[in-house]
Image 1 (cartoon, rainbow, N blue to C red):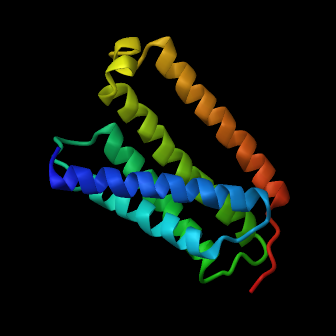
Image 2: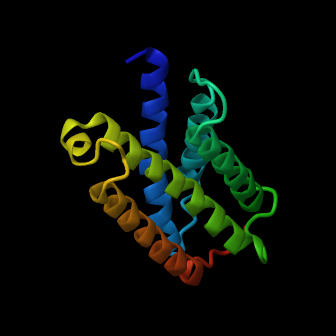
Length: 157
């Protein structure tokens, strides 16, 4: 593993862990200001460093990175310049959770590619164990998103 890859993986994992802490905050109507900043910075850095890997043409990874950056820009705008006021509250919740989901989606993909026991279960990434894992992640994020939209009503500062 190169230093670049190690750095990319490290910030990805920090982004996921901090994102899960932010998600817990959303579910408890807690802004988690410090953790939110860590989540947004590391998730932006994850997407940007992802574009630095060698590739030939457009790949699914590039597509995920572009989509992630769009949602991150929206989340950052909703959170900071617009201070979660009015519609920006639910726009923030959705965009932040989509950004986190995309990181977790990639984590599952990479886990099935790099962890031998998982790779044996789904070597092509199209087998039922892979689809089931991704389906579970998607369902959990949909539930978390629904609950976060209902529960996250922080005081506007």
